[in-house]
Length: 126
Image (cartoon, rainbow, N blue to C red):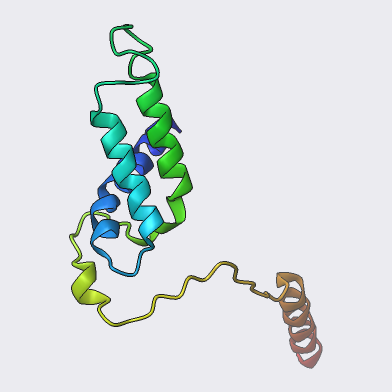
């Protein structure tokens, strides 16, 4: 399960590049990424880097928060193995996000009953 989580985090980090290139993404989402990068590069941290294990802990917490906050937006730019030029592909198109889809299915029991009735008819005709 942890392998899957790391894989998702890595793919979301890779999709930041495509999100930043899209002009339809709001400025505050782009600013959140830029501020995260600035904080990562700043020499002053909440927890000093000198402390062996906990020095990077505040940076990790910050980026987990950023990725969690922007997860829906980043998943829209998810690129598996192929590279997609989102500016060219979605230029001048409005992207609609579908949040919930409901589906109805027929029960398999009714199909079985119909089949049983047909089998009974065939037996009686013989």
